[in-house]
Image (cartoon, rainbow, N blue to C red; front, top):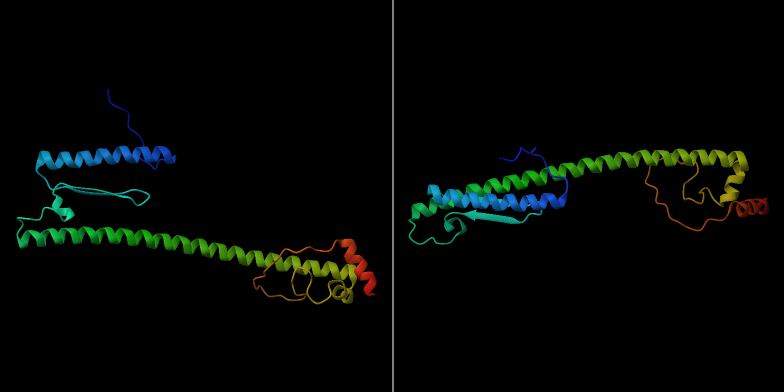
Amino acid sequence: MGRGKIVIRRIDNTTSRQVTFSKRRNGLLKKAKELAILCDAEVGLVIFSSTGKLYEFASTRQLMGEELYGLSVKDLQNLENQLETSLQGVRMKKDQILIDEIQGLNQKGNIVHEENIELYKKVNLLRQENVELCKKVYGTRDVIAVTGSTHNSYGFSIGEDSYVPIHLQLSQQPQSHEISARARKSR
């Protein structure tokens, strides 16, 4: 009795994925060796794990640069061409993966930049609302008297409408009753 078919898709569980990789890699290497022996075929197999580890098999160790004695210049040239073609394919795949990763990071960077712009807009809107509330509570002149300058305690300039990045710092802020006391003293 045979096993049922499994759906071929990425295994989500990392432990199961690693076990499956190891078992199937060993099975693939075994089949490659059997194919080379049974059919007198030249077989080369290169496997890269998800962590970038290399596993390889070559039926003739000539692909590994060993046992080259007895080969003619033409045989060596053919071997070199095979290796260069394979290497070019590997490099193209690696370059494509890197390009895809760079594009993905650029897209994430653009999204973060757009989110930043939206947050700056919200901060400026809140700042403007805060200035309006201070004007209603303290009057226009008293807003400057309460904060001590045209900048409030959070470092926002009153009346400024730019979307420049704002660098916030944590500091101990006086309690609201202390602000009210300062406002009464300054009058």
